Length: 225
Image (cartoon, rainbow, N blue to C red):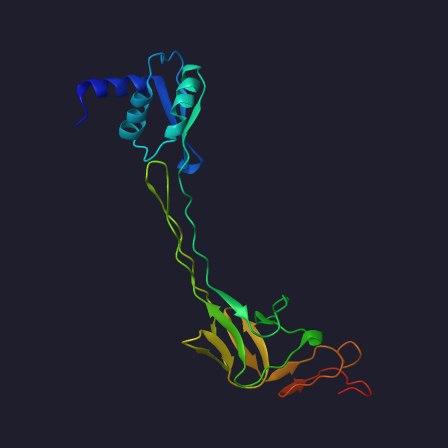
């Protein structure tokens, strides 16, 4: 326990100085209260007050003479800035191993076909489609009093293998189990044998080469297939 004289000094300094934690506790400012009398304040008294009474874990000790000069002049002073921000974990994600998907509007069933006609690329049985990356853990931070600032862990990706796709456990890679085209429905990645052409097959689409079934509700123009 600190000697009585030391405690009395701390009580006096508490009445004279306000410690403010800024930026979420990453740094600490000392602010003289109105009417504070600090003419006799020494560097050792201030150091003990901040480390033992105010529970700071470290100080800008090389700056103590300047800090005391500012306080005696009635100005605030930065006394600690060694806090560390938490680093939040990264959510799980997919890395595409086929042509990068292009965002399109879902159909009435909520499905998204990631390959527009002009960018259509068939996939084959055994072809890797995407790799699943796990979430990462967060790294806690701490404030200038050594108190832990919690970090958030990343969330696992919701993507799962749908029909005609398997997830290889070791490599966490989605692989096509049949020829077709890639479709995403909600959080499910799957391969369809059917290619729906929502317009005529003409110069706007070009010829269509696809190993599965092709459904063309419109017309196939001359010299196209």
